[in-house]
Structures are given as C-alpha cells and as structure tokens.
Image (cartoon, rainbow, N blue to C red; front, side, top):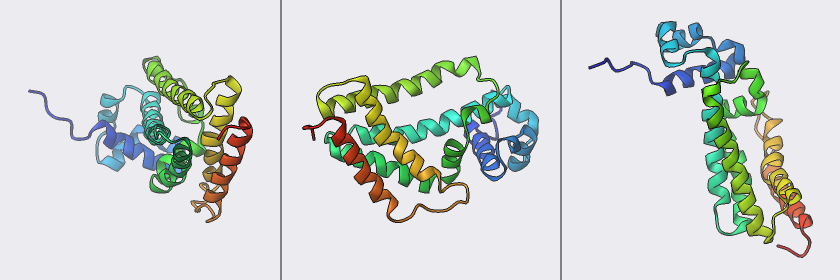
Length: 200
C-alpha cells in the first residue's frame, strides 16, 4: 500500500494562495510553498507537474467557489430575491474570503498562468458555460424572453457591477463603504427595469 501524502492538493493550494495574497503571483514558487508547509519542493511537483498547473488549479478552485454562490443565488425562484442574493453574495463572499477575492479581483488569469495547461481547458470551459446557462435561465425567468442584449444587461447588473464595487476596496484591504451595497442593489433594480420596460 502506498504511503498517504502528508499534504493534500488543497493544502498546497492554500499555501500558494497565502503567498499570492501577501506578495503577488511571483511569490508562489515551489520552494516558498514548501517552506510554508514544511515540505520539500519536490513534493509540490509530485502533486502539480508545473507551476502553471498549480496556479491554474488555484484560479479554477477560487472561481468555482465564487461561482457556486452566484449560481445558488440565481436559482432562487423569485427573480428579485435572486437579484438581491447575487449582489449580497459578492459583498459577503469577498468579506469572508479575502485572499481568494484578492486573487480573482486584482489579478488577471494571465498574471497567474503563463501558459494555460491543455489538460484544464475543458474544466475552464465548463465553469464558463454553467454561468452563461444560469444567466440565460435567469433572463428568461425575469423577462419571459431572451436576447443577447438582455443577457448582457443582466450580466452587467448581477456580475460586473457588484464585482467592480468590491474590487476597488481590495488593494489597501479596506472595507466597502456602508452605503455601497444598498447603492448597488438600487442601481441593479433600476438598470434591469430599463432593460425591458413594462416588465418587473
């Protein structure tokens, strides 16, 4: 029977995440990760064949965790409840998961991964597809008709605007102003009402 690895893949990704949050993507080397874990750098490469794969896995894990909350919010049957929950998720998840939020909001994928591993292309496509599918379903539920323009407007109100609101507070590890969450709620409702007049 093989020896059980001392550190799980998540342990390694957690160590890499802490290093990125503290010192930027370049800080997450195999040597530095091993130092955090008290493990030889070779054990890191045993789990992740390359640094690109390690960082890609970290990015995918973080985006999947964030998206899980968005998808759960948009699954609520009432369109307005789903809208409110999706906006709240952006604020609440960022506050509760500062390092992962920093990773997603302050760095582009290309900042983390020089060459995206072919082995993870399908996983990335699946993550993107499930969000597009959910936004389409939400648009249909809210308006009774789906167009590319309406999906884009829904995405702006539910994803882009809350994302931008929390993003600007991360570099100095600040907290959003108390009024900002309600302002985003009010703005999203107004924008989606204008997206299709005479619809709720």
